[in-house]
Image (tube, rainbow, N blue to C red; front, side):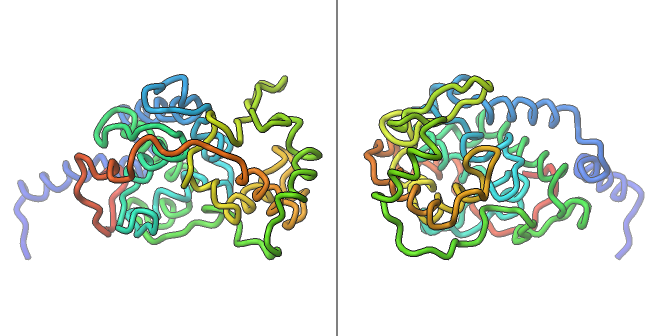
Length: 276
C-alpha cells in the first residue's frame, strides 16, 4: 500500500493530539479540563449540587482524589471500560459508569453524557491513568481496555464468615464513630478532612457499591480507619460493613436507564489516549 504526501500529513495531524498524551505533553485544553475534573471529584456537592442529593464527593470512596491504590483508583478504572456490568445488564462505557455513580453513590441524577461535568471527570481519570497507570508507559498511546493495573479496584475478597451487625456495632463504636459520628451522620474533622455520613438521608442510595457488605468490607479493611488501613481484622471489617449497611438509606432518585440518554453506544474497543 502506497501513501502520497498529503495522506501521510493528514494522518500525522490526526494522531498528533493522541501522541502528545503519550509523550508527556497533554494538550493544554485537556489539562485545564482535568484540573476542573479534580475539583469536581474532591468537592462534588459544592460544585455540581444540581446532580447530587447527598453529602458525599467522589473522593469519599475513591480516596486521595482517586489516586489511592485498592480504593478504586481512577488510574485503575479507566482502562477497564467499556466492560459488561451486571447491574446494568449490558456493556457500559466509562462515562456511563460515572453517571451511574451520580445516581447511586451520590443519590442524585445523572449529568448529561456530553456535558461539562462528565467530560471533566473523564479527563481527570484519563490524566491520572497517564500519570499513574502503567499501561500508558507500557503501550504508549494504545491501551487495551481489558488491562487491570496492580492496585486497581479493591483488595481480593476477604476470607471471613458471614458478617454480624451485632458485632459490627461494637467495632464501629470503637474504630469508626470518632470520625463518622456515633449515629453515622458524618462530620468535619479538625484535620480539615470530612468523614461522610454512612447511612440516613445524606448518605449513598440503595444499590450503590458500598451497599454491598462484601465489597464495603474490602474497602474498610484496606483503608479504614483513615490513615491506618489494614489495622482491623478481615472479620471486623466485614462485621462493620454489615452494621453500616443494616441501616436505612434513600432510594435512588433516577432509574439506571438514565445512563443511556444521549449515548446509545457501549462498544468493546481498543482506545487511543485522548480519543474518548
